[in-house]
Image (cartoon, rainbow over all chains, first blue to last red; front, side, top):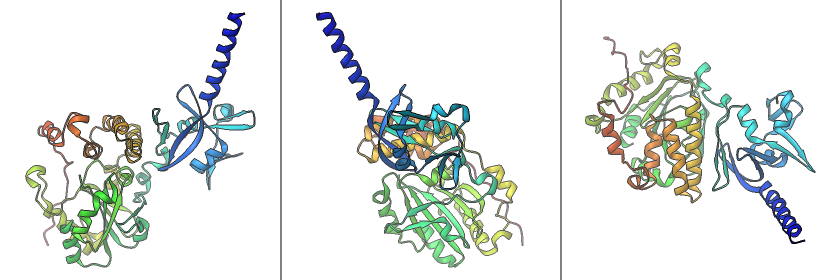
Amino acid sequence: MLRILIYAAFAVLLIAGVASAAEERNSVVYDGVSTEVTASVDNGKNLWISMDDLKRSTHFVVKPQGVCRDELCFPLPAKRQADFISKRGDVTWFNLTAFAALVKQPVIRDEKNAVWFFGKRVDERGTYLASLEAPNFSLPDLNGKMHSLADYRGKKVLLITWASW
Amino acid sequence: MPGWQKFYHDLNNKNFEIISIAQDTGGAKAAAPWITAANPEYTALVDDKHLVTQLYGMVNVPTAVWINEKGQIVRPNEVAYVDNRFKQFTNIDALPYLDAIKDWVEKGDRSQFVMKEHEVKERLKAPSPDRATADAEFGMGEYLHNTGKAEDAIPHFKEAQRLDPDNWNYKRQAWALTDSEKNYNTTFMKEVQKLNGKPYYAPRTLPETKKP
C-alpha cells in the first residue's frame, strides 16, 4: 500500500514536473526587439512557440506557401513539416530554432536568463557583395531624430564609425 | 571629431555629407560629450547595437566607407584618422587620405581615388558563418548588459571575441563595459603589445597622386 502511494506520488511529481517544464516564459530577441513568449523547450535546443507568439515576436506567419513576412516567404521542406509545426491540443506550436537553421540564422541561448537571441539570416548578410549597394540603416542623432542612409541618396557620403572607448 | 567638423566646414560642398556613427553600447550617454564638444554641422548618429559594425563587416574604429550619389560603395572599409595625433602608434599618415577625399568631393566618380567595381568586389568579403555567430553572441551580450545582467553578458562577449579574433571592436567595447583586468584578464595596452609587429590596422592603399 505504501509502495503504491509512493509510486503514485512520484508519478504525480513527474507529470507536474514535465508539465511545468513544458511551458515557460522566455524572451525572444528578434531583429533587435525583445518579446516575452510562452516557450516549450525540448532537448535544450528546440524552441517551440505558439503561432500567436511567432507573429508577435518575429512578424512571420505561416501560410500555405511557407513562413512569410510581407512579400518574403520561406517554403518549409514538404517532408519535414512536423519538424516545424506541431499541434498539441488546442495550440499549434512552431519550432523557431528549426526555422532559424533552415534560413541559416544564428541562435544564441542564454539559459540562465531565459533569452534566445536571433541573429541575421543568410539572405540578410553581405547584401552588398553583388550590387555594391551600401547597406541602409536608421539610427538616431542626439536629439532622438532618426536618420537613414537612404535620406542622403544624391550626395556623396563619407561614413565614419568611431567610439568613445 | 572637431577635426572632421573643420574639414567638413572648410570643404563647404552641398553635395557632400559626413555621417559619423558612434559604435557605443553605452549609447548617447557615452557618445554625447564628444559630439557636443565637436558641435558638428554634419550628421552625427549613435549606434548602441553596433549595427553598422555588423552591416559593413567592420573590425575597428575609426573606419570609413565612401558612398557615391547612387548609394554605391566606392571605397570600402579603411582606417580614417583626420589628424596624426596617434601616428606614432598606428604608422598611418592622415594627410594623403584627406587629400583623396577632397579629390573625390571635387571630381566625383572621375576621381582616381574612387575604386572600380571589380576592385571594390575584391576587397569586400562575404561574412563567414563564424562572423555571423560572433555578431549574434555580441548582440546577446549587449542585450544582457543593457537589461541589468552585465556579468552574464561576459561569456557571450568572450565567445564573440573567440569566433572573430581579429575584431578589435568586439574586444575593446566589451573591455570598456567592465573591469577588463578582472573579467577578461587583460587590458587594451597588453593586447596591443602582443601584436608584436603585426599592424593594428589593415594597411591602406591609396593610388599615387597623378602628376598634373
